[in-house]
Length: 298
Image (cartoon, rainbow, N blue to C red):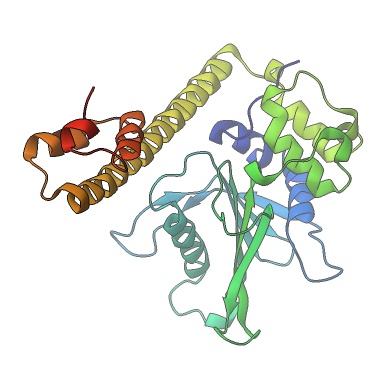
């Protein structure tokens, strides 16, 4: 057996947002969301994830999965692999739109129902802490007083989840393991198969259930997403290296000026074009060299 990589948008929507996904989504939301004590989602309706603009000219958006729960609150769910600039603002924009577009003209504000934005990322969003799940609500700045529970942001950061199959106990852990690993498995782990809803998720994600055209489309989408990710990571690494080189060259130039006076342009050009190993070599020499020529000698 082979399973879809549910971290890609097509597969995620198929597993959690299709016609046969109600049981799967119910189990997933009950496992990962912190509902008031003793409460669980007893029913939900999966609805069109397209978010209608409130005003003419307002930006159109679409989330991966959108559901109205049994208590009339709404959950919008996004699976995100690429950490592009402005993504955190997109999360805010989507939850604000889902909340504000509930009312028709003339309806009272008390009819507004809570909205939860559940965002699953395949990258680290909050390096400040190590926990996988984080929950944000509107609170007073200095006091532990909530303004409202109507808008909540929940983030699940998959790279922070490090449990092995043998360590899975909570249903939430099993779901996280499924999200993280389904695309590389060729069997249903026994620990996960005991959960009926997760077992059904594997059935939906089984590539054998797709047509040839659907499978080719999924593979194209997956290849595109991960090629974009590799390009972004390469650019980021290049930027970090360039930053280190620029900083190293500036520091070395400062030390050289302190020892030998203003640097002639040929030596400054050599600093600008040097690699990291060469800058380190010159940095060692500057402590004992008697002249600039000794520092920059080949």
